Image (cartoon, rainbow, N blue to C red; front, side):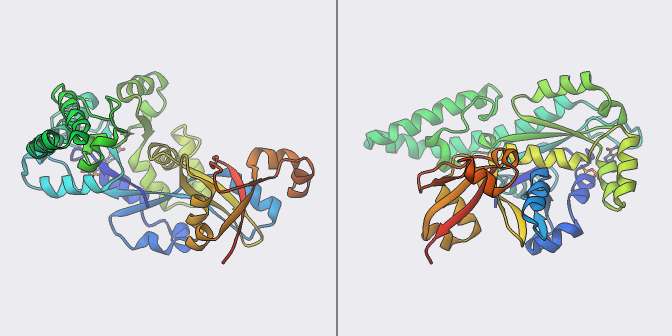
Length: 357
Ligand code: GDP
């Protein structure tokens, strides 16, 4: 499944946040695989639609979609030069589908900042610089081969051109993602780090969590990437509390829900994912697919046999179903459609697949 790799400078709260993301007992029951990898935190994607569906279909339980975050060991300046953890770090980043940078904006004189001060702009630059340098090295290494290929094979020229263009962007100190070059097909084989989508998690204190203007300023700093604001220490404390205690703690810092909820939503969005829904007496469940997937591809997420034997899908949008009040009423209102193998799925489609086995 797709993952976000958590990166950040030392002492920004990565371990604290990662602790909050892991050992979720309720989740482990439904997702046995969730506990297999010690460096992977699996978070449920809160989805109130599931509760409503469970009510309607009298489902025994609800199973939300999940988002996986991988803990990537600390970045040090000079990673791209292979110092210390460098190469291992970069290899782990390469495996992630998106990069989640934790940035410290909390004030705490007892926690040393590696650069001596809390400065989000400079922290973002430090990480970007390492990733940019690593990409420039990748391009430099690939260049002789690409030039040779372009001389003998005309159809290889676009690759060389894309690489040259990418190199210019990197030389200007910009990430390929920020320059809008993340979807360039010709660059795909190089698996460049800065083409990956970014998500920023600002590890904040109460002051910033209550300060909309400051948050807006930080959002603008990282736009168009998503920004999440949370207090990692609070998130870690929440984990051990009963529901009413959780609510109390969140209220005390003026938050309506855990920051991890926002992190799950933002992570899902950053990865370009969406969900469709199924419901029956056993469970109401959200299934994860990519934006733009067809009905058979979506069926394949449940079981490969569903994709292979796909006949058609009975689909009603969640909103139409709720407006009608029941499946039968949605049907008589003409809101339930039979869709074929070319149908492109929408977020919130409530689906029943018909298939041959
Ligand atoms: P890492 O090096 O990025 O993994 O950072 P850690 O998670 O080890 O955190 C470094 C220190 O900062 C620890 O002493 C944490 O308790 C503290 N810390 C982490 N998050 C917060 C926070 O949100 N607020 C405050 N005040 N301290 C934090």
